[in-house]
Amino acid sequence: MNKVTEFIKNTRNVKQGFILLAVFAAAYLAGAGAGTMTREPDTVETAASAEENWGLGFSESGAQPTGNATAEELKAYHACFLDPDCGEEDKVIYLTFDCGFENGNTEPILDALRKHNAPAAFFIMGNYLETSPDLVKRMLDEGHIVGNHTYHHPDMTQISTVESFRKELEDLETLFEETTGQKMAKFYRPPQGKYSEANLQMASDLGYRTFFWSLAYVDWYQDDQPTKEEAFDKLLPRIHPGAVVLLHNTSSTNGAILDELLTKWEEMGYRFESLDKLAEKL
Image 1 (cartoon, rainbow, N blue to C red):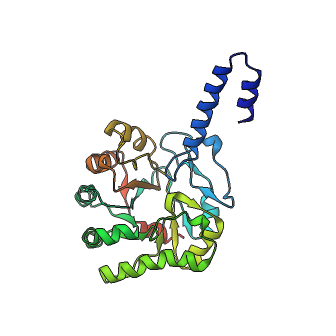
Image 2: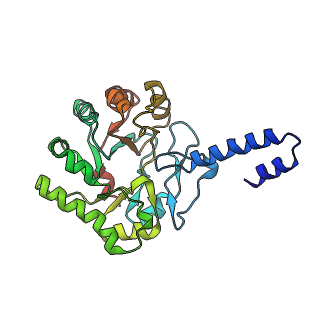
Image 3: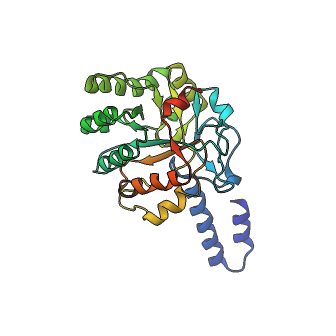
């Protein structure tokens, strides 16, 4: 922001300077925003710092993006954001959904997945399991993975003790087993994509595999949903071999377009694999 400040001090048009400052500030906040916002390539760091919001940089259509950390760096913590072993011709997609609450869009999402015989991983919170146990059971019955998005969806980077970190995950595990009669998959997604090296190590020590993502779009604002065209503009050109796709179950757009979206990806030569396959490589 220093260049902008200098411009404001030196410009003869003060109003123009403050307008420019507002534009830069808005751009900065948008780039550093919650979890699924993507970042431009020149803002992506090459290694994980003490605390990060997961972010991506896209260089060209159809190519794997870069992330805040490399696949090799994340693998040291049994974590990943894509399948780095997929070459240009190995067109695999891993579908994942974050589930905070239920608003009627999960059923059409499940219907589309069933139609395409496409496995997915649903990362759920405590609230979702408490209020929508039948849908969670349907996910399991139809062969999907149900993973851990923590019980309360806190900023996990603010949790410094192993005991508190474990409680957020194990409380959900316990409720899941009581509700479904099954053990919960040891698959973890950090709320809002916020993470630290210490958190990644804690998850690994607890036997978890941590999954970020390599493709997402702004689909989580319930009252400001993207149009079908806006969704396709993001999700079609940026799909790539080995993609871990993050979508939100609360999105009415996702519920409406998923059947067509999966069809279009299939027409591009892609196939859908279970996240189990990727976990085996970690």
